[in-house]
Image (cartoon, rainbow, N blue to C red; front, side, top):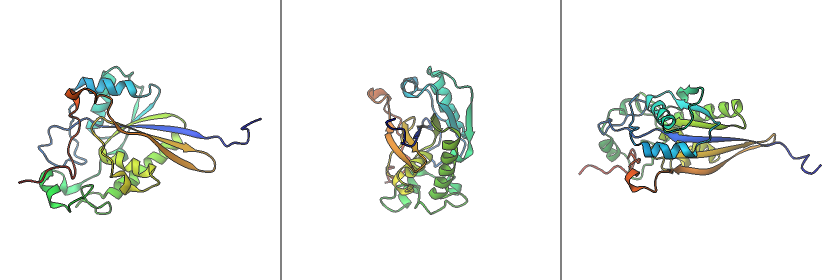
Length: 232
């Protein structure tokens, strides 16, 4: 029979959603601080709810803003799943004593052209490096790929977490994930193909914003890195 000797390929589709904007951070770095987000723009959540798969398994970070974002998607008409698994290892990078520092002043103190809060191997004082975030994100993705092989997965998480997932999909090169913008409530899809011989990733879409055609709802970008203007 034609194709009978071809190995079975299992495709597991990840639909990453970044949490909604944080408005009450006082202009400060918040990292793993458990701070609320703004889910008031129902137009945005209606648009996101239309593009996500109905039969997916839901996962989220353990932080409040991820849960609030999921709730806003369900309130927009997406059928509420029977459950959503909380994964502490999908939380944002722990930025230690940098959390609570003024974001503009901090970014102005870093080397020109920096793509993240620090070099990927530099831990925040009392916290993590981006590589620490990458390794725990990778372990969690690999475990879930085994648990939910062949299914759609919706993961509500954070900018750093999604950049780490992109680094994994780009041949395990974490620094390459930092080249992408991940806007609030955006959708990033990463497909994992596994066969007995090998496994590969595909990137069908990154940082998609299905509401963006309406300029009135284009304020989902929350400056958090080198794009923050230096103080005068």
